[in-house]
Structures are given as C-alpha cells and as structure tokens.
Length: 282
Length: 270
Image (cartoon, rainbow over all chains, first blue to last red; front, side, top):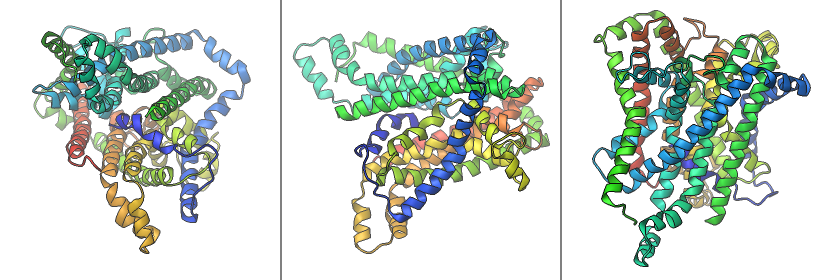
C-alpha cells in the first residue's frame, strides 16, 4: 500500500532544478510556515534532542555505550537477523509478487489481502499471534519462544509486505512485448527472466529491501512477547534502548538511538537515490 | 509474456502459498481459535474490566486525534510539495519519510527528551503553563502522529502529481479564489487518496505500541492503551483476555485494509 507508492512518488516531488527560486504565494508561505513549525516540534527538535543528549559526553559516551558487551551483543543480533530476514524477503517477496501478478488461480485475492495484514496489525498483537502457532502451546509442536529463531520469525512477519508491495506494481507495468520479442527471437525462458525481467525489477527490489531492513532493525513491539527479550540471546537494539530509558539512563539510550537514527537516515537517502536513478532512466 | 513451465508454476504456487500461510494465515486462524476458546467468555472477561474498556476508549480517542492532525498536515504538505517550488524541498520530502524508518522506541525517547516535565527542553515551561505532555494525552497523540506521519502525504502526492494543475489554473482564470479552487477542484480530485491515507493512518494508530508505551507511562485506567493492555493481560497469565483484546484490534485493522482494497480498484484514475 504505502510502500507500493514509495517506489514512484518522490521523483515527481523533486523535479525542480537544484537551487530553484521559490514559487510560493503569500498564502502558501503561511501554510508552509505552520507546517514547518508543527514538523519541527514533532519530529526535528525531538530527534535533534537525541543527538544532543548523546553528544553531551562526547565520543567517550558512544564508546562506553558500544563497549558494553550486552549492548554490543544486541547490536550484532539485530544486524545479523535483519540482514538474514531482508535476504529471505528479497527471494520470497519477489516470488510472491511474481505469483500475484503473473499467475491466475483461485484464492489469489485472499493471498493479496494476507500480504497486507502484517502492515496493519498492531505489533504487540503480531507477537501474540505468532506465539499462538509457534509458542509453548503450538499445535505444530514447534516452540520458538525465547529462542533466537523467534527474532527471525517476528522480523519476517512484520517485513513481509515491503518487497512484495514495491515489486508488484513494477512487475504489473512491465512491457511484455519485449519478452515476447525475445522469445520469438529464440531466447530461452531462463534467459528472458535473467536478462529482461530481473534487471527491471532490481531497483524495486532494492527499495523494498532498504525499507525491510530499516523496519527490521527498528522493530520492537512484535518481539516483546515472542522473544522474551533475554540479554545476550534475544535482546535487540530497540529493547536495549527501552531498558535504558526505563532505567533512567537517557544518555546511553540516546547514544544507541543516535546510531539507529544514522542507519535510518542512511536508508532514507539510499531510497531517495534509488528512486531518482529510476526516474532518470524513465 | 514469458510463461513458466507447468511444474515450475505449480512449485512456485506451493512455495508462495505455504510461506504466506505459515507466516500469516495459520497464525491468524490460531488467534481466532484462542480468542473464542470458551465461546464469548474471553470477551466477557476482558470487556467487563473497566480498565480494559478505558484502554480501548483511550486508544480510539488518541487515534482519532492523530488521524485528524495527520490528515490536515498531510494534505497541506502534499499540496506544498507538488504545487510549489521552494529551497529545501527535496530534503523536506525525504525527511517526511523518516518516521517510517525510525524505531518507535527512538520516537518515544525523542519526545521524552524534549517534553518531559523535569529535564526536557520545553517540558518544564509547558508544565508551568499547565500543559502536561508526557504521561498524558498530548504526548500520546504526538507519538501516534509521529509514527503515522508519512501515510497521508505519500498517498496524496502521487495523485496530485498525476492530475496536474490544468483544472486549478482554469478555475483561477475564471475568477475562483484559492479557497474555492481548493474546495471545488483539488479536494474532490484527491478525495480517494485522502480516504486511503486516513484508513492507513487509523490502522497504524490503533496498533501503535513502542512509542506510546514510553510517553504514556502505561498508567492503568488513565493512559494505558489497548495494545499495552494486551501485553499486561498476557504477562498476568490472562491469555484468553489478551487474545480477546487482540482479536478486536485485529478486526479493526483488517477492516481498515479490506475497506482500502475494496475502494482501490474502483477508482483507478483517482
């Protein structure tokens, strides 16, 4: 849904040349001013407060936070699990998008709706729902609660829609004439998929992967009930930040949060670049 | 269009359907089974607790506020981003996406650092004037607004770009003032995009957990929200109640996405 439009929209926003003059009227200037005041109070100033609070102790603040073995374990777990889940999504998300666009079978509509459920479902409920099937009372006899696998499972659940919803519209818009031309010229199926279809999907897959990774490293709610939040074992960075906040150590919380913010900003910039590259290619 | 061989096609179907079924479908069925494990008993137990009912009302109130604020901000911001040129526009457009990539816990912490009543940047001044933000509804509304900020903007921007401004210019040249153009031309054209944005914002707001947990203080019967009540019931070994509240929350969320998917194909041009 929202992620689907992300692939196409921002390019139109930035069509103006760099350093363009303003075309604001008096009314729209007031509107922009009001919007910016609210945006600053809500987003910019609070995020700046994190960076400033973290910086109060200079570099040693960051180093001390990162040196803490429990925090370091949380960072390692979060990054490896997020990469793993993003990789799974790159494969499964693309396959799901392919089936949704190119295949016709009964129940495809249900599949389509199921993809959006993780997006709309409250995160705490996501954890509870997965606990029902993969927890201590599992009808399958699989109990991942408080295990490392629970982190993978929860992250795979919450990030499911991202790549599907970025690849799907691109695949649907793809010009199939080229594929037919290639086939009539004797190209094999595998060649067409590898040389024609896949390259045109790469930007969408990359954008979806970036969103999926960003979501995975910042996930909190779905892990609360499922993972048990055990230090050194299933504790992720968000949980670590939360326990710092709860323990009143705002400087440590802010230091760790600054690192997460930097990653988030990096992802947003990467997305922007991907979209602009696609837009330029037409 | 390249056609897969029949075995490959079937293999793909089986892989995709089992993956989605095991990850989403079956857990959903388990949720329904657990919620209705003793008929309506879990629901009666959960919703006869005044604190749970209060949490539900708090959640709906906060969500409605967040939806209202984000709709006004989202439509206004989308109009500014699409119809006007100004320095810093590209940076602003990218920054609006930021809340999607920031952890809810970080969002909660950010608001806490600025608005808490003891050490916050603005908190003590606001409290001196009788406005408590943290551990109170303003903070919860702000946290919810923050997490769902991009949703309306991102629905409206592509539609505004798509329709262009020919009609708006025509209306203006025929003597319509800015307000008339907005009400008669622009808003009707982006009506459905706004509806999608609102529905998505509502779904996101109803379920927000991490950010609200930090700024609300989770005071039972006061600032506790429905998703926090789920956690509390589960940790108090009232799993049936936890599943019952979850079922209601999921029902609302699924209703939201079903409404979106029903509305969407009918208006391909909007």
